[in-house]
Image (tube, rainbow, N blue to C red):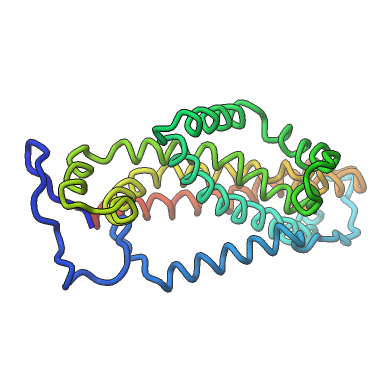
Length: 294
């Protein structure tokens, strides 16, 4: 629910009456019902299982060697497509899991940074800037090699598998970027909407869930889509902690076959095959939500 405001920002009647409004919260033209919330809970539960138990690692068992008499051996490259697809599945798990975590973390960080209590907003702002100012690779090394050495932290909170570490690192890293996008979207909500909510004596939960966020989130979808694609391109960094993704596949296979050109070309084509359709789908989603809001 958004509130109509007059030219001077004064509150008017709400757009929909309580008796006729469908159950749920409308976000950018999409009605979020209890079924959607249940689906989100199930997705987060699956993410927690992957983080705790690490998902499945892949073994690359293809044993084909390139022809030394040709400049570029296409037959050799295509022979490793099945191994590449298995590695791509691991990278896909890390990307989706990490970004789902980032979307949730980012919203909480944005809300904490907007707090009027400096004891909350200042440490949150410092944490966001610290994470954004350090490389993801350094954060991966700290979480995988450094954190387990801190014995004061309970073992379930400091010792994770390689894939779980990558998901958490992507979630925290891009969660800080998402928080700034969320904050900009929240700040873009007209001041009259806040004043109208206060005038109608709406509680904080109702104001945020039915007035502010449904108007703020569509504004940040382009930025979130860009972060999703960026997370997909950063997920292969997990090879540094032995995540069996696409870069791990390319490095280990190239060291065995002495044919890096074909293998890294295959990785590049695979990235294009996923990134370009994803970018097009995100643009269509932006246009659809923009259309539904008009």
